[in-house]
Length: 486
Image (cartoon, rainbow, N blue to C red; front, side):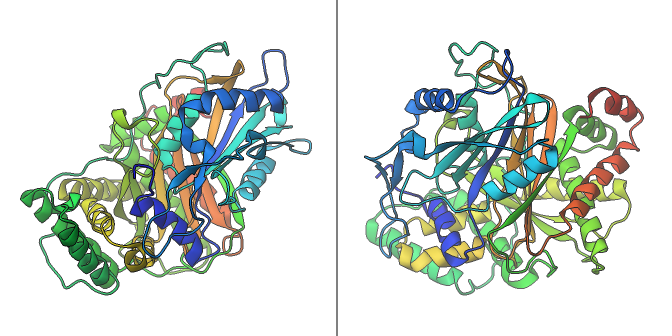
């Protein structure tokens, strides 16, 4: 059944069931300049606009066949006969003065509420009252429905490449640099016994594949099977033997969020990368490492000698997969050297680590585990898969980098000024960072558990300081600051 959830899609449902603090909503807030004549569009105009644009995406008028993962079958998408766009698109306003801080507080509250699983799993809010006459669209979609890159593709479908609202070109401008997509070459050569609960997943998967007479994608070719087996072994070693360090970032969390943003010109990140021999993605990770270092030091914690481990989602969605929903991602697990005080050395260590991971095929481990899970009944694998792939033993923090449009986009003739991205938090993961590039601006969206991260501003300022430290090593960075920093 083509509309049946995959094991990975269903995992995001299960994560919410396992822990009420793990709300699996992705999305963000789009901030627009005033309409050409001033003000914001009406809620009726927004609903009519979305209704037309979403005709190509039937999933947005479909609901789950079951609100939970069944024991022997995966949920599937079914038409919602009672679908009414008015139940998904709302109107709100910020109180004066509509500051940046107020907008961040609104975003935090918006993402602190679970979507209703009896209806299509998305919401959008027309938000008025921002400073300088601006307005915004906040959107959230359940992660079982779409991943980060797919979410951005869908948003692009709703926007225009020209100020005129008439028509829409279905050609998204080329994306900026993104995190690596398809690691090659074998990973670790060490083999280990499969620990519980992974053993039950693999055994059930093998039995399911044998009885069904169908080959699992993970073992479709002998060489590919060897590579994936090695990568899966490395993932297991990392989870069960090496383990991510325990810090105050990995504590029980509730559903209430805090949120903050850091902005930097893409040109600045590129200049730093060129000067210091690193990619834009390496610079992003290094600045996040600086922020996390500041956060732990501010809490008086001992810095883990081997670094914090970040889960870095990798897009597997090719250009032909644009506007296809579901999750098409795997992950790299990158050690961030937060104990390293020198910014240049910190960046170089990350660059070397990323290069090694890409060449080793490390991302194949998670893919292999998910592929094996696809042929097993949910009762056998689902909770185990959710606990394994999103366990605090496997990683400390999520950092995701999603490329947006390089060119300006518009809605109702208003320029889209910036996008504030949001990444969900898994159980016992109190902090996550979503990074999105759009029209020359890169925005870090920092989501955090409200109860355990009252010091979110320390992390945000630490990321800014990390960028400043790296920028100080680049001769022409001052000019970029003057001309482009927002």
